[in-house]
Image (cartoon, rainbow, N blue to C red; front, side):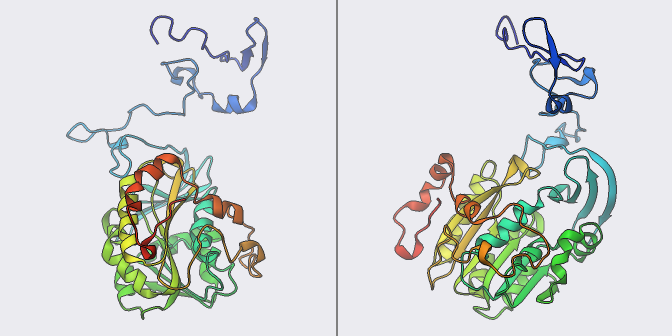
Length: 369
């Protein structure tokens, strides 16, 4: 800072593990602050004494021929990056569809990465897996037939197995290598494949759904990667139309729907398409997942015309399910209170989807909170 702009803002922390109380006396620095200190003094932030290294990254990555900084140039979240310390590379390979990486991190345990994008970590996978499964399944009574699109790590299957009413769990995953890798490195997720109700179909989900009998499923859960490359089809109108056809009257879809902080335009497009496609209700919910860009992820929930579905108030509460612990693991994130709270949206999101409220018919009404 120039001049006296930063006067009085100096951090009392000093580099010898002590802190000043402003009177020349020193006291021990709390362990949380010690942990946050840079490992080497020369790496401390230079712009201001209160900025601790680790909360931001300077552009130190390589550039392409055009001079663009590659590290900050991901098309899904340009200009930003999240760093995890890699302790050990456990697996690195390339399937027919994508590059697959598994590494051991210092803070989040093992991490699965596809084409350079974090898919899950051992520490926070519970938030995503539990929410994408139980938001739809706890919104309808006694779901019996469920389809999972993607989800090759097995985490969504693990969560569906809590629902004793379910008789069939189909999963269509395009990449067999993802399943094999997760079986080896993420057994706590792969356990979902061991449920006898699971029927695995390796192949293209779009093609699979074209051959599904009309009205076969009570719920469809789309656990896809970000909508770039092959996954682009999974956020377009033909896919949603095919999905709606495969659901019974009053059936529900839960689709991964990106971050409200980064992808409002994409969320708007998905909501608009689904409002025209599904004749029941359409909602957007969200959850905190630290290792995903911006730290949050969204879910698009839709129901077909038929028995009304009140997504905001679970009629099939997880706490009352007899098979809740069938997977041998207690819930870590989801509960009925979190379920309802997930549909409370920030004011800026309400404003940016307000176009969807323009005179909808009763059959097309969309709620966003």
